[in-house]
Structures are given as structure tokens and as C-alpha cells.
Length: 463
Image (tube, rainbow, N blue to C red):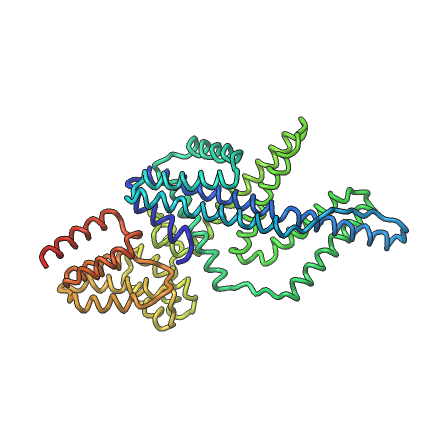
């Protein structure tokens, strides 16, 4: 559970917000913070890579003109020269400057959080504003403020604040991130240097051949022919292994986003003619349309692959649950893998099919799976607890401690820790209960925290 949305953002929004309106507003604040972080990364990337990219383009052009002259037997050919000087001191100063900026971005919000101390909606907004202002000042993102403000105004105009729509968007980002993360954990990318070099050489050769053919045979501009060749390569890369949904969607998202940003940057730096303005509008419109259409594909992927979606998303339609459930007789005889097995277990919890959940939990344990074992054993514990009319707190404590022995779990169950804290207080182990409460306080609701604080004070007073 090492992803920022799942680990930090969603628990904090849920804990601090008292109603749906506050959830939506905090979600907007966090989205704004993330957008400015992306802008800052973009500034750093452009500043650092632009000289290198320019040098690469010049070198490739020089190689192209040399090859063209060699093939055609020309005595003279065009060569470009881009002056470049390596200055160690300037690079060192820039690195220190970047380090200071990153330090301030992390340090200032931490200081504000310590000064304000109490966790509340207002304080969280102040902390996020402090973080955003620090990023803006550090990376001089003053023009970008207008873009973000425009997006926020557009969001407020067309999305009803207080109906959990913005918060649901953040949740969906979390579910999509989970699906992609799980895919690459199950299918790690194996990078072979030899294969990469061969692919790179073949790609460059392809671009050279296309450029030469189009320039010589069709009198195309070399810039236009290169764009066509690169577009063909990009399409080939996109549709490679199209049947595997996760990387295919991720590739599309990256390509659409890069194209959108490139279109904006490429046209903002140049004055547009009367004819170019509507063309730019059409280009941006259809790019945004594709990004929005992509959200439907992401939603379908989440429904078919996400575990967290069924675990913590509210108001899932029964039709979705019933369409995704698989018959128990197939699950008993076919190995569908840990992820799909757990997904089927979560769906059964939502449908209150506890007996079937217990059957699947036995299959999970027999297969020796580990990543969701705390989730499986925790829910088995609660199902059995309902059947136990006179619980033995000492035995329950031992069962819970054995469940907590498993590390690196994919799903965190706050209810399990609430149960453990309650049992510790009931057994008189109030200091240990207080210690556990501090460790998991970020994941508990304000109501639960207040309840346990009162129980702790009561138990402490009686001792």
C-alpha cells in the first residue's frame, strides 16, 4: 500500500471532511496541488532536457544529410552546428537550486501543519494553499495560475459541489492506479539492453528511409515527413499487444496528454493567423474529447479488474455486482489467480454472501497466497464473531495479533484495528491501546477517535 492517493490523500479527505461538500472541496484542493506539481516537473524537465534534445535533433539532421549525400553521390551537403559548452559550476549551482526548491516544497507545508496542529477542513485547506504557493513561487508558475483557475471555475460551473462527484473522480484515479500497479507487479517489464539498442537503430533507420523517400519522391518538407514517420512509429507502439487492456489504456492516456500539452505549448509561442485559430480549436477540442472518452474505457477497466472499487466505493449498482460475480463451482475448480479470487470475495461481501466468502477464503489459504491474507482472515474473523454469542477477549486478541503478523498487505482494514483497540481496553491494556490508536489514527474517523479517547480516559481513571 505504497501509492500516494491510496495511502495519504483519500484517508485524509475522508477523515477530515464532515460532509460531501467538504470532500469535494478538499478533492479540488488536492487536484490543484497535483496539477502544480506536474507543472513544476514539466518546467524542470524542459529546462534540463531542451539543450540535450536540440543537440540530438541537430546530430540526427546532420546524419541524414550526410547519408543523403552519400547515396546520391553529392560532393557537398548541409551540416548544422549547435554550440554547446559544458559548465560544471553552472550545473552544480542549478542542482543546488533545485534541491532547495524541493526542500522548501516539502518543508513549508510540514511547518504549517505543525503550527496549526489540529486536523480540520479549514487547516487542511490552509496547508494545501501553502504548498501550492510554495510551488508557484519556487518555479515561477505565475502564468499557470490562470490556467488552473480557469479549470476550477469550469469545474464549479458544470459539476455540482457537494454530490461527491469530484471526490469520486479522485477515487477512480486511485482505482485506475491500483489496476495498473497490480498489472505491472504481475507482469514486470524486462528491459534487455541489446533489444533496446536494436529497436532504437531500426526506428532511426525507418525514419531516415521514410524521410528520404518522401523528400525525394514526393517533395515533402523534411519536418513534415519526420512527423509522419514518428506518428507511424507511435501508432505501432500503441497497438502493440492491444489485447492487454492495462498497458494499452496507459499508453493512450500518455499519448493524448503529451499531444494536448505539445499542441498548447507549440501554439502559445507563435502568433496564430485567422485560419490557424479555428484549426487549433478543433485540434484541442478533439484531443480533450478523446481524453474524456478514455475515461469511459478506464471506468470499464476499473469495474472488471479493480479490487478496491468493490471494497470501499459507495453506491455500487447491484447490476454491476451481479454482472461481475462468477459462480462458486467454477472458482472451486479453476485457478483464476490471487487478484481475481480476492475480487470475487469482495463482491460476495457486498452481496452479503458470507458462506460463499468462507468457501473462497479456504481456497485462498490452500493456494498459499499472501498479499491479501489480512483482508481474508480479518473478514473471516468478523463473520465468525457474529456467530460467537459470548466472545473470549483473550482468544480474540491472539487471533487478531496473528492476523497482524502479515506484512506488506494490499488492503488496510481500519475496522480490524478498531476491534483490537477495543479488546485491549477491555482487557486493561490501555497504554498499548493508546499506542495502536496513534499508529492508525489517520485511517480512523473523527467519531471513532473520540469514542476511543473517551474509553481510554474511562479505563485510565478506573485503574
